[in-house]
Amino acid sequence: MNTEIIKIESPQDKNIKRMGDIIKNGGLVSFPTETVYGLGANAFSEDAVKNIFVAKGRPGDNPLIVHIADISELYDIAEDVPEVAVELFKKFSPGPLTIILKKKDTISDTVTAGLDTVAVRIPSHPIARALIKASGVPIAAPSSNLSGKPSPTKAEHVIGDMMGRIDAIIDGGDSSVGVESTVVEIVSGCVNILRPGGITKSDLLTVTPNVTVDKHVTRQVENSETPRSPGMKYKHYAPDAEVVVFEGDTKLTFEEIKNQLKENKDTVTGVMCYDGYGFDADLVIFMGENNESYAERLFSALRRFDELGVKKVFAQFKDDDDYGMAVKNRLFKSAGGNVQHII
Ligand code: TXA
Ligand code: MG
Image 1 (spheres, rainbow, N blue to C red):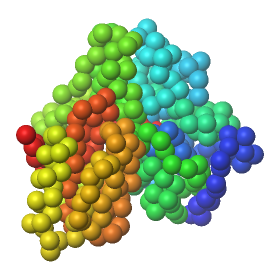
Image 2: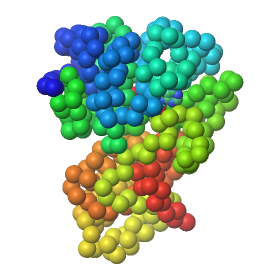
Image 3: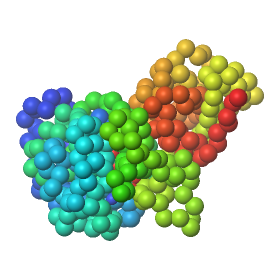
């Protein structure tokens, strides 16, 4: 298949209409969102949605998020919407929040992997919003990576993974949040976090005091368990390099990583660290000053280490702000649980 790459900088660009038509007519278009790039298809077309699973190599039991442009479109796809869900959408949408709701029959079992619920998100990225409006339908979209790779935060990541597999790729610049949306379910009025992201637990607590974090956000799913969200059982991307996370006070983790680098002189090494810490490694990637910038740069950094053939990556990490949970969730998985707590 020939994949068109098109640079679109403004939601007024006339090509948005053409991209929307591709989606409406059953094609696949990758597009930027504020979290990561999405791989979009008409959520009302079962055939189009099936093609998403083929293009990504995604297991059929992992459901997709359906994207709408406005809360008024919610009742086209969901029903029995709890009051707290409406309040959450009003406060945090458009933005990086996904809510699991009871699905309507308009949404096929292929989208929801046979579940009777549908994941709904209203993205804030202007090009994503313009594309949904232009297509005139809700857009089912997982992250636009090959299954098993990190989610793409740049068009070049999508081009690397999806060329020849989909109709078009909209290059709309880098995603600003960098990790996927916060996914929540509502259980008896209580908001349960299934995937931490850009809308943090403290953010959610401003709407309701009843917020819980699902046990599988912080620990692995055992074979005997059925997680609340199918995505939780899939291993997130682990780079070819061995990743070791050093969690704790930044001065202490700085010293420890320096020692480790000395011991690994004959290895191609990489470091992910906060700004202001210098290391003698083959590739040092600075993650900014806090976990918000860490989130923004994480997936791109993991891809970079692989591209440059790094064998061992040392990651400095401190769980000291609202974004800590979202970064920790992805970083610890990429390290396969290889975490040293430095105290
Ligand atoms: O930020 C994002 O959420 C990005 C952009 C493109 O919007 N999308 C994204 O989609 O990350 P994906 O498919 O990579 O992740 C969707 C997650 C999966 O873990 C899936 O299992 C979960 O949402 N999910 C989807 N529908 C669900 C449902 N009905 N019940 C429970 N979990 C669901
Ligand atoms: Mg994904």
